[in-house]
Image 1 (tube, rainbow, N blue to C red):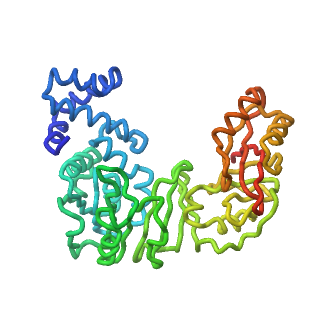
Image 2 (cartoon, rainbow, N blue to C red):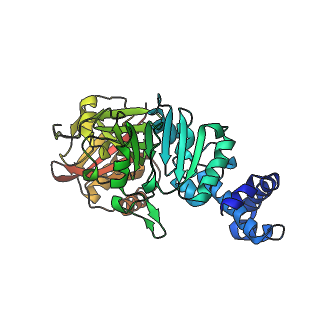
Image 3 (cartoon, rainbow, N blue to C red):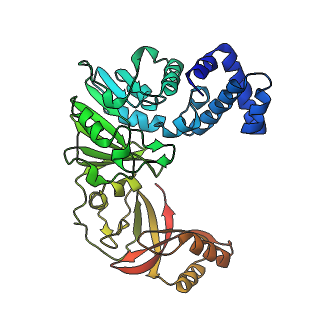
Length: 392
């Protein structure tokens, strides 16, 4: 799909054709649908129709209005979804003009446009055409100014007060893990960020924290328990050293990275499995203080406590039993407690959880309660905990 295809897809004919393509994809699949469409439209337009509808399907989990947006599969996968983009954009409240460098199809741009005028910059003409179309869909065309160009060569307009930078982290071979291989490289993004009073740089969730300057704020964002994004905040947008944000709850845990101050203890009545963002932000000690909890092992992120505490930052379980790890003893314990099926999780255990879960479930037979097994270390010893999930 190219920019010309996007323009045609926005026309009355293109919109009607895309409705037809959506029905054909649901009925036939991509290749048969494309062949069928090729009988009525040119080969290029048939391919564009299928590409658009496949992209909308990929975007369905991210955007409430995915069925009317303009994207392909790759751009949908790389875009920030509504819930994350709305969260990060809120920090820019109070600015009049923001530049979004590496805007793509506009996931972040359109969220930023709710707060300020946005200058959207990208080198990809097709994705800029998609952004223009998406801004029109959302009624934000007058709040987005589009510029084609390389981010490395961008010069800030004096009116721009803040930057949002989303470096390209993929090429034709897949993900690029070295930040200096991103487009632009992280060092260039940091240089651009210093040209304005405030900036946010979107990062890979697995970023090496040693690559991050100490004066910034590093935020890790999870959605429904899955780590999806990291952001480096700079300038006047810095509020803490580290932050873990849990969406859709909208709760944030902030503070200094772990200092190893949490005491260790044997399992108490309750067991907490921290959200992955809390672990990546190195805020386990902060959460432990909030929960009046202890660690099982100094190098393991599981927590235990005597009292029940409601928290959006961890899954809570009631401890039913714990024992030194032995598959036979674990099976006997589960059988004695009436378990019919188990779900197995682990931290700091070498055991294949999928294989163990399969073996235990086959042996238990499925008739009885569903329990959770956690494999981990207790002061360096391998242990198994039998748990029951609790929800507030």
